[in-house]
Length: 213
Ligand code: TZP
Ligand code: MG
Image (cartoon, rainbow, N blue to C red; front, side, top):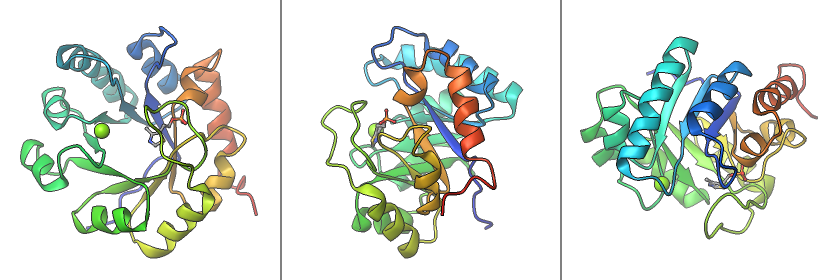
């Protein structure tokens, strides 16, 4: 199977405490040029998550963007999303594959080399790697791993890597140069005064030719 090519920006739709609507945020990210969205609503009921996912699925279809749901393979399937993103305490990859249609994308969060190897062995289509920097967007965040973990995972596994954790427009290109195929962001987008403009700025910094040495 050919290696998955991920868009440079992995835009996570999580309003945090901004009071913004997830569907409005998704629309703004797509208007700014994002072509991969993950819906992450940690405090939502299954029905709230599904309702937002169904609306965002329509938007991502129109834009030709990949759409993933965080945590919940059942909701991803019900919303006809492209796949799911799983944490270390969510369903394992094999169980999620039983829930999802064939060919669905499954990503797994990893925080060290052992988890990265295990996720790849389990059949993840991509792995999240982090937290790279300090983050306030996650309950009980782990200590920042720095760019060293991105470099180490890149060298050790042949699987697309999505770096995450405290990444901003100013650091995105550096993190990509360390080996990330895609850069995930929550707060740098959802807290931005103009989320569509924030996406445009990040995409410009990640454009080919803007790699840092
Ligand atoms: N997993 C590792 S760090 C993180 C998650 C979900 C939060 C990333 O959010 P931000 O705001 O980009 O630091
Ligand atoms: Mg999870």
